[in-house]
Image (cartoon, rainbow, N blue to C red; front, side):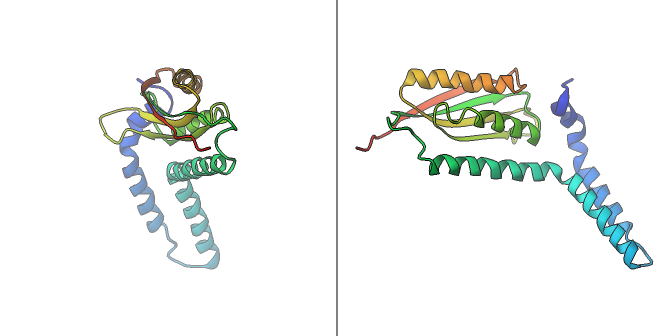
Length: 184
């Protein structure tokens, strides 16, 4: 049995569509039969509260995407690399078996963004496995580094950052590097 949101999603996740259907049906059926202004306002207010609570995971996902794009564009506008241009672009992929929901994705991405100034991190993204029978998710970080050794060291920092965020079972799945053409 997994604790936290991963355990919660294991048992209640498959039932979520039924809960959403019931919420929608009960909201529609609760429309007041005698439509006075105050009863309609009350119905609209409670319907909005129910919709915001029901769709909170989707809202969190949209917010997470927005913050990730905002951080990426800020890095690009600030110039990305320092005066001595790094020689490698590295992509590290981390397998996170204990990731279970959008809040986990948000926590991992915010943890990785804290290291963005350390090695010119260009982009971070995390996602859940799309297969229904596979648990967890992955996180991918693209960054620049002066050498292969520094790319390996920063990859270990990335994995440790995810583990420190509460995902102790995270491990590095792959590290790929490409040389960057230096412009003079």
